[in-house]
Image (cartoon, rainbow, N blue to C red; front, side, top):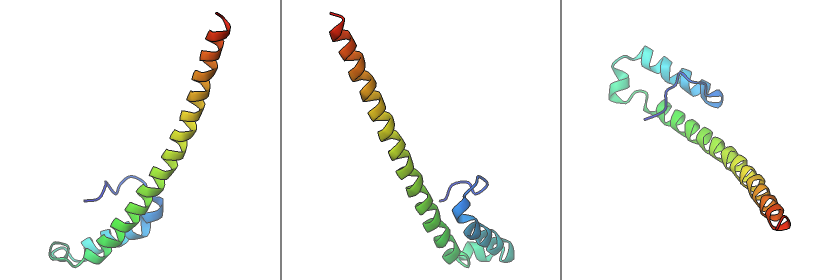
Length: 83
């Protein structure tokens, strides 16, 4: 099962177009496996896209964590200095 193909998938547009074209050209073929190789290509493309998004989100999260830890450390240092 793949995510909705209506939302943008910039890296996978060719595979999406091929799958849609295959489904249009062979109405019954899509049910008996005529489009399976194209679907596998699309699945791999979407998997790569998801991995790239996950890696980018991990980098953002680690940067945010570092910023937050610095903020907490500064806050604790200010509390210790005010005592």
